Image (cartoon, rainbow, N blue to C red; front, side, top):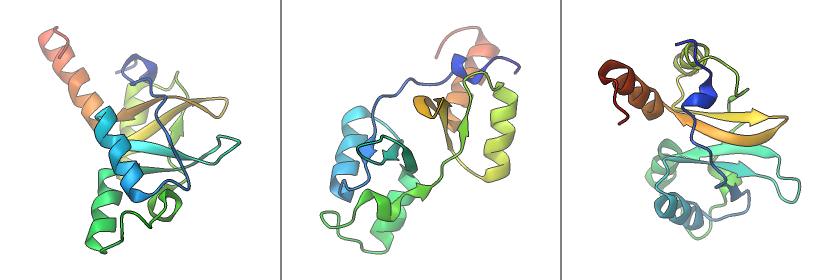
Length: 133
C-alpha cells in the first residue's frame, strides 16, 4: 500500500457553497451519486468543511428544515486534507485514527480529488482479484 492516494482518488469538481441549503446539498449528492461533498467559501473557493451522509442523517434526526438550513451550519469543519503523493497506508491510518470516511486530496489548497473508505475497499478487491471493480 505504498502507492500514492492519487492512484485511487476520485477527481471531483463538485462542491457546494457555504450558503447552499440542506435541500440543495442533498440534490447535489443525489445528482452526482456522491456520499460527501466539500463546502467552500465564495468567492475565494477556500475549503470550509465537508458534508457527508452522517451529517445529513444528524440534521434530519434533529428535524432541521431542509429549505432553511445552510451548508455551513451542518458541515464538519476543517476536513482532513492530504497531498496527492501521500501513500495509501498513510491515508488509511489517518482515516482510522480520526474515525472519518472521507479525505480531501488537495494541491496548494485546491481540491484535486476525494477519497472515501469505499475507494479503499475497491482497491483491496482489485489487488485481490487482479480485476478493476
